[in-house]
Amino acid sequence: MKIGVVQERAPNEKRVALLPEALTRLKASGVEALVEKGAGQAASVPDAAYVEAGAEIVGRDELYNGADVVLCVQRPAAEDLRRLRQGQVLIGLLQPLLDPAAMAALAKAGVTAISLDALPRTLSRAQSMDALSSQANVGGYRAVLIAAAAYGRYFPLLTTAAGTARPANVLVLGVGVAGLQAIATARRLGALVKAYDVRAATKEQTESLGAQFITLRSVADATGEGGYAREMTADERAAQQQELNGHIATMDVVITTAQVPGRRPPLLVTADAVGNMKPGSVIVDMAASALGGNVELSKPDETVVTDNGVTILAPTNLPATMPAGASQFYARNLANFVAHFLKDGALSLDFAEEITAATVITHDGKVVQEATRKLLEPAKAEAAAAEVAR
Ligand code: NAD
Image (cartoon, rainbow, N blue to C red; front, side, top):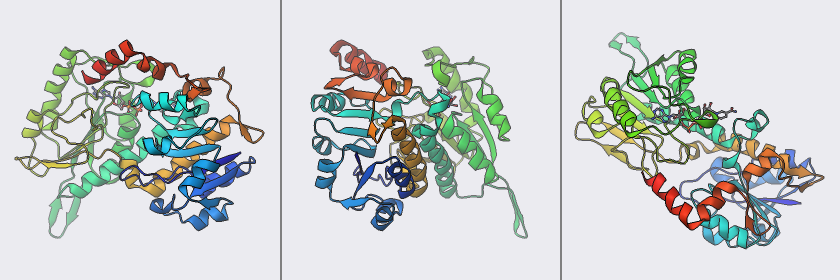
């Protein structure tokens, strides 16, 4: 079996699906490897390093023609998906729920699409494959670094001959994987950190990192299924925003990471709240996307400076801003994931097994994953789109 590592072509995507080290591990299982020329360049991995690990460097046509299993980070563009043919397998962060039509097209072409973002994350044996967690971790770290770079003062308390600089007050909204790393990173830089989440379990996690947890009087625990948050009612949302406003006004830096699976991210920082912040304050909206974000005034991948001097950043792909480190973790997740399906040097799919059932999106000419299939039924697709737009 030949695996093929593509060069990522999405704008600003600098990660690569496999690093030589992960490739060596897969080769030990009897797999051959093709790597597209320049695939690792933006992640500081020269073609020569892949050759040393036993791969053959090829052009894009040769890669799509010769690989049995194509490995990627992001779903390739439509023109590249059309290169895939009957029997080939595509594995990566394919985000099938964001573009079910692309999955339907792959099914029609007889391609098996397997998506790492559909992994059941609470299974302990899936943890080493959990690319959403590894990449969210990178994101939380980078969010703090870009906030610190945009903030015109120190994060730590500094006592110098020229006087004392007080530490920055940092607020992290959303204490999932990215939020926890943001708290830890801001603490390492010496900031005073507060955090808030709707899941009760996050209080102890926040405090164990030396940050202060904010408990709102207005909102009860909103823990949902699978360790995620549930969507809140309109009344709960309004009360939450109102109460958070008072905290936000006293902060120098706010980092938002709040998400609810399959829903538009909750609005946590309103224009009014930003209006009450001090000049020079910085907000990083990690939830920003075309669907909206946690911050009313944020614009995906743009820097907004408000009239009262608050800088709002909304980077949509923070892991790609640290390509070598992010790719290292992604490659390990992906190699473990591919190894999970390998039997005697070939991919073998057992749909009775949980990871396979959850992550194989298309197979044998059909869209087999239920969540994606539902979105392709016309009535359900309309209802789902309306939910997301709410
Ligand atoms: P996520 O990206 O879906 O959301 C980030 C955070 O936003 C969550 O903590 C969520 O509670 C919070 N949030 C949602 N709405 C909010 C609101 N209105 N106000 C404030 N906060 C809000 O989450 P994630 O980082 O992917 O992780 C979610 C959970 O899954 C965590 O409990 C994490 O520990 C768990 N997880 C478990 C495993 C495992 O068991 N192996 C692996 C990965 C993640």
